[in-house]
Amino acid sequence: MVLVLIVLAAASRLLPHPPNFAPVAAIGLFAGAMSGQRTAWLVAFAALIASDAVLGFYHPVSMFWNYLAFATCLVLGSSLLARGRSFGRTAGAVLASAVTFFVLSNFGMWASGYYPRTWAGLVECYVAALPFFRNTLASDVVYSAALFGGHALLTRVFSRPRSETVGA
Image (cartoon, rainbow, N blue to C red; front, side, top):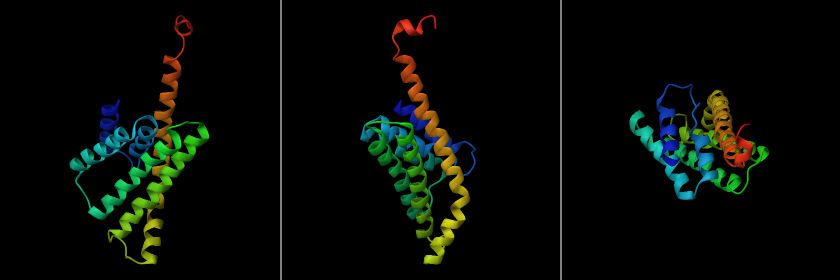
């Protein structure tokens, strides 16, 4: 399953997609919630490094903040969802993940010098990034629903006693 998640996350960044509409953050949440710490880190960062090697590495400061933003998805998954998941808890983690990614990744853009390193430049950076937040949040919701919902469905189907699944 780990290899499948790495390949899916890396491929999702390489295939054509709307800006900021990729499952990497959702996979980070899912990996953090479902696997051990070491495995979760491997999934997220192997996918990021592999896809960045193909796409091309970018400004090191910006890259640091993006990787840190994805790391927060893992931490949110392992801290909020590893011991128990409910709709509300998962929705809260997805929202926190999208907001945290927005704040950290755009701070990285500002810190990289793409905007003036002033308070006004930081505000300008966040305002310019608002249209991208919609896609970030939408992709986190869609992909988290698919991952967590798919896992819940498969768990339910495969954990039924055999008598319930035969002839149903």
